[in-house]
Amino acid sequence: MAIFNLIYLSCGMVGLLLLAYKIRALRSSWGSPRVVALISTVSFSAFAILFAAPANITWINWVSGVPNFAALLVYSLVVGFAGSSFALVLFWRYPVVQAWQRVRLIVVSYGSIIAAMIVLFFKSEVDEERQVDFDTFYATQPTVAVFLFIYLVAAAVGCGGQAYHCWQGARDEAISARPWLARGLRWYSATGLFPVAFAVIKLFVLLMNWFGERSFDVLSLAAPLMASLAIFPLVIAMALPVFGPRRPSPSLWVRRWRTYFALRPLHRALVHVNPGIVLVAPGKFLNPHHRVRRQIIELNDWRWALTPYFDLTVGEAASSRARGASLAKDEVAAVVEAAQLRAAGSSGGRSRAPKRRPAAEIVDGTDLAAEHDRWVRISRAYQHSPIVDAAVADAARVEAAGGMD
Image 1 (cartoon, rainbow, N blue to C red):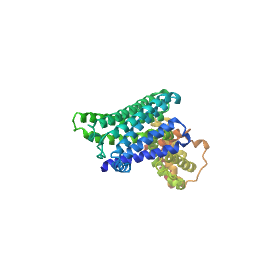
Image 2 (image 1 turned 135 degrees about the horizontal axis):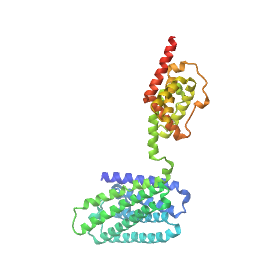
Image 3 (image 1 turned 180 degrees about the vertical axis):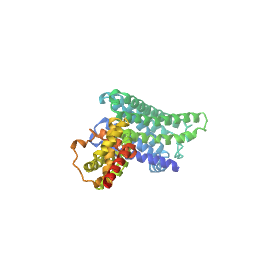
Image 4 (image 1 turned 90 degrees about the vertical axis):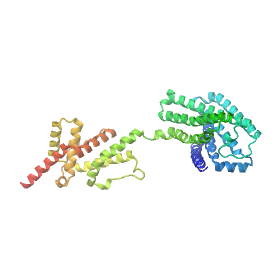
């Protein structure tokens, strides 16, 4: 029983947290039919999963004083979930007036199904409490079989309709133009497939029980556990349209981390110029966009501080060697810049008297993307270019020879 309690209670708590968030977020729109359908969908699913835990089944049966009353309660909540989720997606796809014509039929139909389930349950002889195998234990009792049949068919039709309309809605031209909303609808579609699979498995086991075949009963125990996992795609489906547009794309996030690690060696090589400006804002340590933005700011600041110490002979030597190697224009500029930074940042470079450099020599990228690319090229040249090594070494030899003279 422990595994059943763990899965049902944990999934149920996730559902209750989602319900609390949605109630708080949508409290200003309580008159909207879409909001009512949404809150109903989350409520039915969360409480159905929570009450299905064996520990809660025992408590519900004890409080009600009716053996197996928890089965009636949980199954009614599942039917309510199927109907409300079907209504919800209709409100999403169609104008309220047009959708309400179909939703009215759903409300009447699913309300009648729950009423029929109540009548059939109390007409049945289910005096022995069954926490997890109610379906298979009482499957051959006619009233219970009809009770289970209409419950499972209603769940399959409602959740199947939800999955179908969500998938079709995600393909609508107006919605496909909003990718986060389309992704959310696909996850809603996946949410509906879990209860559909659950209902199909349960119906199959019910049919086998009627033919006296009990070897498939284990599937009836596993199916509800699988269905309870639908709460996780439901959370994702509701979160994507809200939080997705606020977050950069995963590919951009990965690119920023690549930029960060490409700049890091150059950043660490120049930090001695002014270590006091290095900053990582609280809570931003794992934010690659913030980290790269700070790297660019600090590298530009250090470059500005080193510019008066740039040696024209180093730049000319690096430029001549780079052109001789047939490098592209951007690579030539990166090699020259890296050589100047290497020479000026060394102890020997900083020992020279600073000179005022023309403003034209201080060139930044034209936009943020260009600035990232430029500094990445400079960083790679600083670390790996033999031209930079040779230009700086030539300048050092010339300076040493001049000192001996």
